[in-house]
Length: 349
Image (cartoon, rainbow, N blue to C red; front, side, top):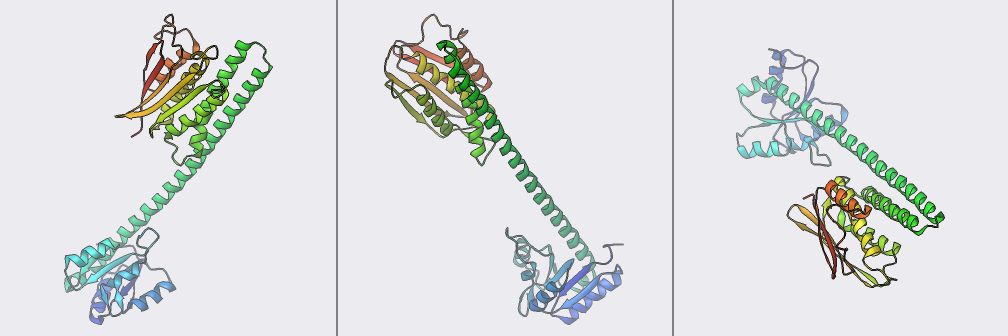
């Protein structure tokens, strides 16, 4: 039966001449054109390995100047660099376990019967090494492909962020040319919505993990920008944050980020009229598999005439739509002491 394609080169490292002769004869009788070169020490084997390429190394476990396992070499990840089949005079499980653990393809206990079937052992070891090399090549290709896709994805986030910034700048320029205060305010609000989406892509661009975003970090940046935009400190409106580390997918983070933008904007604009001072409290916490976002103020509260289930204002309507897109439903508590709106959304665990 044919066991191997002809022309494979084997380096036999065996200090026992009689054993080496028996192994060599078995390959000759097998008749498949194996090329067998023999040395009797680790040092001699190392020299031969520098001279050319070997398809398989068959090495005695114990040699006069070391162990046959030394011939495998070791890569950066501890992987074997050369294909080695170990011969041993002992049927010890410890020897077998150590050989396989350190990267040997197989081990064979020396005996006349084992020497006679050595071509079969060699063929199996060679096939195993070919599979290992194929697996490594596939892993390298996958890592390279993943790295390329990460670069592309990073560039996509960068370009999306830049495009959002261009739109935001256009809205800002347009608002600066408008004299009608209501239209100007609407444009400013739209500008802030664009900025909140751009910030998601900015955070992802800066991140090492493009599948999730640290929403607490995002929240701090957004609220700082809104505080500056609506002159919260100048107006005597304090901003208090209570956040836990929460990771969200981009599919959840974008709509929830817009919800955050709307709620904080509404609080700055509507909760404190006529130079009223107060405080906006923003919370982010985890409950089970959910992220809980809350925005609370001690302002004038939402008028009784406002139907939160079917609001007529764009801001509150956006809150309901975007909360639904984030996988959550907003809840409202309001009164003379202020307003609190809470949204629950699925988080990444």
